[in-house]
Each structure stands twice: as C-alpha cells, then as structure tokens.
Amino acid sequence: GDSVTQMEGPVTLSEEAFLTINCTYTATGYPSLFWYVQYPGEGLQLLLKATKADDKGSNKGFEATYRKETTSFHLEKGSVQVSDSAVYFCALSSNTGNQFYFGTGTSLTVIP
Amino acid sequence: GAGVSQSPSNKVTEKGKDVELRCDPISGHTALYWYRQSLGQGLEFLIYFQGNSAPDKSGLPSDRFSAERTGGSVSTLTIQRTQQEDSAVYLCASSFVHLGAYNEQFFGPGTRLTVL
Image 1 (cartoon, chains in turn brown, yellow):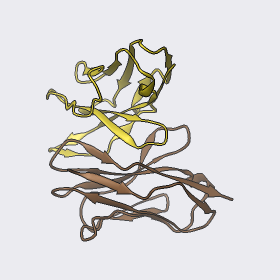
Image 2 (tube, rainbow over the protein chains, first blue to last red):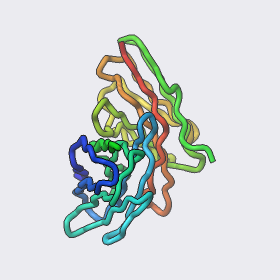
Image 3 (tube, rainbow over the protein chains, first blue to last red):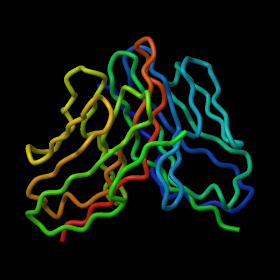
Image 4 (spheres, chains in turn orange, yellow):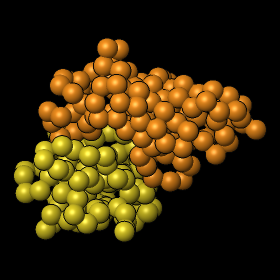
C-alpha cells in the first residue's frame, strides 16, 4: 500500500545552518505530496505541496522537489532560524484513494 | 474565514468512562478526517467521511471507537469505556474535494485526551 518514510529525528541545528529532512514515498499512480509543520502547542498546518513530478513547492524559505525517479520529496532550507523549531511531517495523497498518508514526523530544534 | 475547530481542547477522564470529541470543519469542505497523535508518534488515521458516502472506518483501533457526521458538517468521535492507552491528541482535518482530487487538509488544534 501507499506509505511515506521520513528521516527520524530529532534534529538539532545552529541558526543559519542548512536543513535537509529526507522523505521518500511508495504509491501507485501519481500522488500529490505535502509537507506539514506543527509548531509547539499548535495544530498542523500546510507548509508546501507539489502535485506532479518535477514540481517544486516552496514557502517561508523552505523548498521540496517532487522527484518521481527517486520517489522522494526532501525538505530543504538554506538558513534555518530559531522560529523554524517545530515538527515536520511529510505526507502524500494518492489519486487512487481517499486517504492521506503521513510520515512519523521529524522534530527540529534550532539553537541560537 | 473560520478554520477547523475542535472541542474540548482538553479532556481528562477516568478509565471506563465514555467521551465525545467534536469537530467543526471548514464550511464547504466535504471531506473530514480523524487522526490520533500519540506522544512522540506520527499521525494515525482513524476514520474518513466524504459527502454522503459510507465512511472509511478502516483505521478505527477497536469497536470502542465510533464516529458520525451529521448533515455533512459537524462530526463527533466517541470513545466508549476509555482505556489509558487511548490517551493522545485527537486531530480533525477537513479538505475540499474537486473533480475527485483531494486537496490539502486543514487541521484543527486537536483535543488532548488524558485517561487516568
């Protein structure tokens, strides 16, 4: 079945460091891919998405490119800030079903 | 516009009691999902509603869990005879379905359930 596997955390980085959180997926058909973020004490919110191969989603300095050849959707940011500290979830929506599949989440802590 | 709302925000109950959790989706969103997020865990899918179709209950962990959605809007998740392992944050999400395509989900703030 469809699934998402993302990098285990926790991840701790210094401010202005480069961030990569790996995400790979298994799906039939052509899924849409998402990154959600959960800030401390808040609900999940959409960070970015890509709906077809080679699309790049971007928001708040974060980027992720839908790579069909490697079935990946890695999240990157060139220079993290303390305010980026949160839990990040990779997710997919399969176009053959009605479910969303979420990864287990990666906790990021950015220290000044 | 208003987002997804959930109530209560926190619920503490005793083992064996029943609890009801409520979700108000975004107006016009036909798809509604319930998830469970346990401490340090990812999101566990529980149940899904889409329009007037029969709900997808494949994620419900036991027959103590049930959910309904009245009038295609508000949903209630009921847990009967609660157990300590039911302690978690219960998240509701809604999404807009257009031409069969499922768009991103909008999440509520969650209900934190603690079973003593």
